[in-house]
Amino acid sequence: MNKIEYRASVIVTTYNQILTLGHILDCLLNQKTEKNFEIILCDDGSTEETFQIFSTRASSAKIPMRYVWQQDRGFRAGQSRNNGIKLSRGEILIFLDGDSIPPLNFVEKHINSHRKDPSLIVAGDRLFCHDYDFVKAGNFRNPQRLIGWLEKHAWVNEQERNYREGWLQSENPWKAGFASNMSIRRSPEVCFDDNFLGWGIEDWEFVYRMNRSGKKFHFAKDIIVYHLDIKNAIFNAFRNNKHEEMVLFARNALYFIDKYPDDSSLRECTIAFRHYELDKKKNRWYWDKNVNYSVEEGIERLREWLLINSKEVARILTSIGEKPPIKS
Image 1 (tube, rainbow, N blue to C red):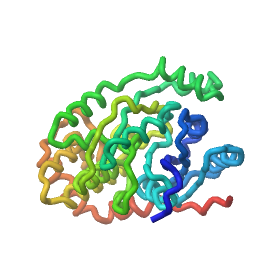
Image 2 (cartoon, rainbow, N blue to C red):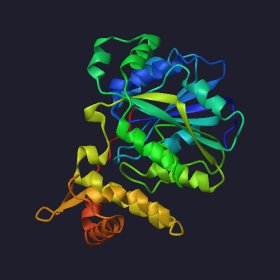
Image 3 (tube, rainbow, N blue to C red):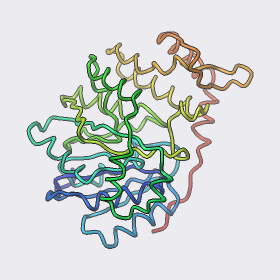
């Protein structure tokens, strides 16, 4: 294990999110806290412009900053976060996504949330902003001005909030935890499962596994980030309605429930399958809110398709090209 040198390591995962990354790093570099922390940018295979944004700030930053890159083999957020964990030297690991802007009290609040109980895994909330053009036009080079603007214009995603509140009242409150805004005290078992490829489920499995290992899940509504919802940077398989991403999500979900066969409640994590519909002529999946299969029927349909179409799954996994490493 790395020697602990900082109170926290902020592990930021990004992929070609150049419209938000500069704002995120500027807000982290201007945190209102006396506690020492480091910033680790974990790049999931971006082009060189991402490194340029990082290096411009790192050259004059008073806060330690490090950068780690992995080849572009599709959405591999878990593996990217693991790169950051391996480099980290903080007592508390704070996870932040590359489309989520942290307020200037973000690090302080995450560190303080672990003060009384070191066994917590803390998940924060998020507000949404679709108006990136307004943010860009505002020329918010001052992080305090940007956060002030977001405080007035960001909004609550009622559907997500209702889901989260329902999960928090259920037998599986850990489902309210997303790695886009999360923290945990470092320990040898803190890592993501590398077997998840494509968008979805990897953070649920992480929170669930940490919960099973003795960590107590805590949802901190007052620790927020501002999620800048930029269309060309959205990886959500259902909003994209892309066959390949829906297949990878299905693969991830079935891997999750098969990994823990003793817990039948995890089958609820495949509830998204209820709206999966198959174009039989093209043999491609698409999202249709008008169909509503049962959980068991959804699992059976997707499991059978993945088995029969193993060559198609292999094609999807191998068609995600690799790019040469960035020279730095």
